[in-house]
Image 1 (cartoon, rainbow, N blue to C red):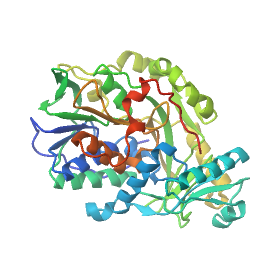
Image 2 (image 1 turned 180 degrees about the vertical axis):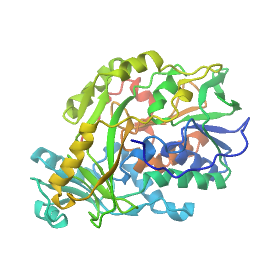
Image 3 (image 1 turned 30 degrees about the vertical axis):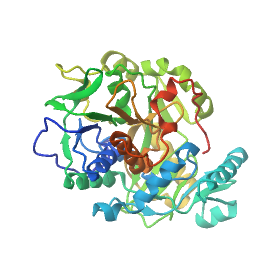
Image 4 (image 1 turned 90 degrees about the vertical axis):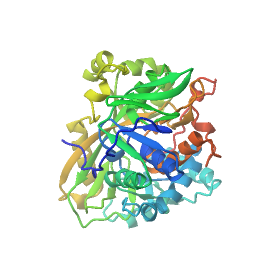
Length: 443
């Protein structure tokens, strides 16, 4: 099926030949970075090979959560939630953001104990989550089926609408002077005397002082074109959209095999944290050693698949060159098809868990590629060996909610401002400076 219906944004009329900062990628991270830059008066161009938010930024669950996050991300999500809470007023547009609360139900005693420990750790960073006992969970979800130990719940978490949020943010940035060029792929990032000096696009060259790569699942290839090895892989996630229903869970909730939230259009967004697909590609083999610790922990939730994507990426996925049509022009939108069996399983798990939803029709499903890192936290960093080059990627399924804070932090780094939060954990060099790179698994 086609992807979700994203609100359209018009590009700027004039193609720029020079600017201070070029941001590559029109997803939530690139848009938030561009918005933060132009809000400071920094001349900025945002380049997108397809359309704003056409890939994972419109295909995610829409959750804006502190709940169960990697502890290293907590200062950044606290910043993001402050920004989300004032976002509609700041933009003068509706992003669909609202405080609903988010809950993750525990299916096993070890999971329940992890939630308990996370609550204690998060309290030290002024995050006041609570543990719901089984009876409390049942009272909030009458008719709930399944054995649960309880749930981890954060009342001040919320959600926004992925098909509305990034377009609303970029419209506000345009009003502040952003130059947006859609259907404009970057073929290469060029340097002069070792420093970033220009980007070559399919429409021409733009001279600049800094480049931010915020390309989501494309970032690995863009960095390879700069001679840098980013250990990033793609994981396929599947989402369903139901027709309108009077049922409102009152919060965003994951029961493991199925997760749901109320949508702005009256339906439900339904997904799962228990079934993702990782296609085996040449990069899977290249970075296997770095991902092995995470795979050992998550192997029950991630299914490896070998097929045509291996050969496609082996033969076609090459960095662009200035003088030739690039892969970025051949694939404007990375829109993977969800597996029918996964769609059916999510729909079945929904009615098995909440039988009262049996009559609610599934109207649409779509897939999206999550850009993952071995430690499941992003890179938000200057690339020290190449002055003027910056990277914001690898949000590992956490990017939508954390996007506003990530954009502000990235803009801090580009402008040399005091960082809004400590960026040390997100540095690119952690993969080469001897740090033991490990994911924290709480949910």
